[in-house]
Each structure stands twice: as C-alpha cells, then as structure tokens.
Amino acid sequence: MATSSSKRAPTRRKYDVVLYGATGFVGRQTVAYFAGLRPSVHKQVRWALAGRSAAKLNEVKAACGAGASNADVIVADAQDTKALDALARSAKVVLSTAGPFAVFGSALVAACARNGTHYVDITGETPWVREMIDEHEDVASSTGARIIPFCGFDSVPSDLGAWLMNQAMQEMHGEPCASVKSAVTMRGGVNGGTLASGINMLASDAVKDFMQPFLLNPRDAAGLAGLPDDTSVDADPVLPAYDPDFRAWLVPFVMGPINTRVVRRSAALLGYGPQFHYQEYMRMGAGPIAAAAATGFCAGMAWSKFALRVPGVRQVTERLMPGPGKGPSERSMDNGSYRCELVAISPSGKRLRGKIADRGDPGNRATTKMVCEAALCLALQLEDLPQAAGEGGFLTPASGLGDVLVSRLRAAGMTLVAGNEGG
Image (cartoon, rainbow, N blue to C red; front, side, top):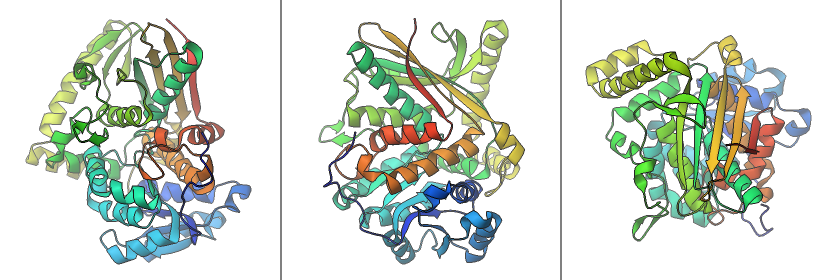
C-alpha cells in the first residue's frame, strides 16, 4: 500500500544507510552485502560503516574490496550519546547488528527516535524491545522515525508469512484467518553474538517477560490491546504433538517465543481479526523414530532452559560457546537452508497453505539478506511502504515494510508463497 506524498521522512542526510556494529560477525556480512549490491543500486545508496574502533572498521572495509571503497567510517561507542546523536543525524536509516541489544542498543534506538532516523536491527530480545517501545514510542511517532526491530530470521519469515496468509485468505475466500500455524525445518550454525544475546536475557529478570504471549502487543488504557478471548491457545507449546495438517511430529521451535510475539503485534497493528491466533513449531518428521526424537528434544529443551538459569552452568556454557565476532565457516553458512511451511484456517474452516524458504544459514546468511533489504526498503522506497500505526513509531516487518520487503526478498532469491488450497 503506497503512502501519501505528505508522509514524513528524514530530510536529506549525508548517508542513506549506516551499518552499526559493522565489525561483528553478522555486521561484517552486512558490509559484504552492501559492497556486493548491483551497480545500479550502488549509485543510489550512500553508506557508511560504524562502530567503536576506526582501525577495525577500516579492516572490514578493506576486506570487502572495491565495492566498499566509497563507504565512509564513523566512530561511535554504544554508550556515547553525543556521538550516537551525530550518527543518527547523518543517516536516513541505521541498520544495527550490535548485540546483545539490551547492552549495546538502547542509546542508539533513543538517538534514532529523537532525530527522526529510521532504524532496523536483527534482535530477538523481546523484553528489550518492549522496554524501548514504552520509552520511545511517543518520541518516534512525533519525529516520524520508523523503528523496526526483528528484521532477521527473527522474525521476518514468520511475520511476513502470517501476513501473506491473511492477505491470501481475504482475497480467495473473503474471510480473515482465524489461525495460522507454521512448521520450520532448518540447517545452519549459530554465531557468538546470537548466543550472547540469549545468555544475557536468561541471566536477567527479563526472562519472566519473555514468556508473556502478548508481550509486544500495543498498550491502551486498559492494558494490552488486541487480545483474543482464549489466550490458552497462544501459550508456548512444551510437548511434542503429531499434526495431521503437516503430517509430521512437531516440537516447540526455539525461536517461537520471539516470533509469535512479533506476529501478534502485527496482527494487532494491522487488524487481522479479533480471534486471530498464531503458533509455530519445528518439524521432526513422521513415524516412530521421529516421535521418539520429538520426545527427547522436548525433554532436552526443558532441561536446557532450567540449566542455563543456574549461574555455574551458564558460566561453563559461555566459556564453551563461540565468542563475539565468531561463527560458522563460510562453507557452512553457504550450505545452510530453511523452510517454513504454513497452514491458515478461516472461521468457516477454509484452509490455505504457504511456504517461505531460502538457501543459506538462517541466522547468518539469511538474516543478513533480510536486514539489508529491510534497510534498503526504508532508504530507497519509503513512499511505497505501508502507512501503519501513523507516520512513525515501533513497527514490525509486516506492518512497516509489507509488500515492498516481500518484493525485494523475492528478487533476492527468497521463496515467499501463500494461497495454495489444501486440506
């Protein structure tokens, strides 16, 4: 949905996109992605690398070759308010990969909100985003800044998938979706920054908020708005189950407590319907072996959640996991993949199927593609974006980027299909 010409945007800035956290593991990949943009796009985008070390930023820039030669370098520590304000004033869009975001992201979000600078990131830290919404929503709305977290594998496939299924149901059957569920299969590794974000959240009191099914929903005078009547179906699953729609055993998806909250915020912002429910799982396969594996997986997942809250176990885990800036090999990331199958059901029982899939490690290669294309939506196609929740504020990939991001991701090789009839 195109916006009106009166839609606010940052005035002419020195840079279209600033890549913050560019020396981290995913940050280096965002620099490589921008360096590899088509020449026609390169001519449109003025960009810079940002972080706290000029020497390391220049190393990353040099490693990316000629495609990064025109990028500038900006030094700004994550706690330096003055430097972050200057960075935000220079940019139309800030793309941040500097996690854990609860440690390194708050001052940057605040700077973008007050300076009318659009912002995207790859966080999965829902309690931190709730805090940022409560603190900066009004300011971002007043300045026109679109703050859009969750633009990586957390939670673009889930959010766009549910949104596309709802659109397809309306177009094909004239009904909203009563529910959407997804089953994910994936292959890939984890980088040190992602693990550090998860460990940091488990070690804090934020884990209590993390478990709230509607943590990210908009607030009104009565509390959380847009809640379905029966919240029990929205509780996070904990047990294995055989699902006849997917013809497979399903288990809780480790990213489900993140992605479901984002989808539910989109549902509230975009009005999917008063009885809309969303849930997601990981697919284990069919047959008795898959059933046994599903049972073992759930038991192991429950033990891990408990153990990682114990300081001694958590400290050992931190010593064993990859450190910040480290992650899977190039070959491993190239050989990764993911597939998200979706089933939507209308109030009258109509069923539609969908699929979102791509090659590349989900948490690294795919995340890089998603967040970079999200930033380019805001930098190059602002006037074509949905006008959701006013002209600024905290949005989701679906509510803030919509069809524009879908089109860009399809052009970048990602499969996004919704609307196949299926029982």
